[in-house]
Length: 265
Image (cartoon, rainbow, N blue to C red; front, side, top):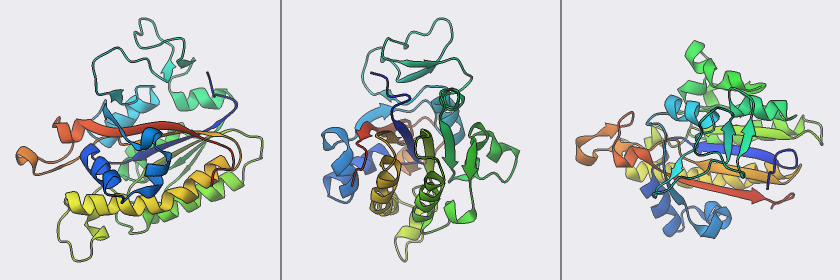
């Protein structure tokens, strides 16, 4: 059943979050907010269409979200109309648009982008490409990767922007969470290098700020939430570091989709 027109939409990319770290944090009780909302209390294992932020998000906004990490032809939740699509089904919301953000706008949605990493920083032509899809976009240094409290500031921006909208106006809110991206060592006092441990500490911090975000987006209407990673990153596995490479720790990502009822708390 389509939720377009009846529900708001929240799309959160936990930029750079590794699948294994997400699963380990969930199992050890370090992400209680996510444990509460994830379907079945678990992340879904998926494959990203990109190995770094820009490539992955270009695919996402074209309707190509991470694919379930199992064989099969998996129908897409959103798609743009084009001939020959083999993953568009009766359950797919199809837009006559160049991207899903424009598609939602054409259906009467306000589109809001709260940026995080450099590809959303509005500071140069490249950093304006992805945010430029949205009617309202925000980035300031305190939302970026070097700010210890970045997620708190990002959520505050979402709250302020949603409070300024008319009550009956549907909204597509996109948040690119920057905290997990390097330098995530800032979340472990004394750490000199980024590692799986500092990556996990960053996720633990982000989880503490999600309740306020979820309350804000569900205050106005029921809200469909898409949340997960755009890509992972390597910390020395098989000699690899970073991302923009096709190692399994980069291409395998956590994903979840669920509906928050209006007034979630």
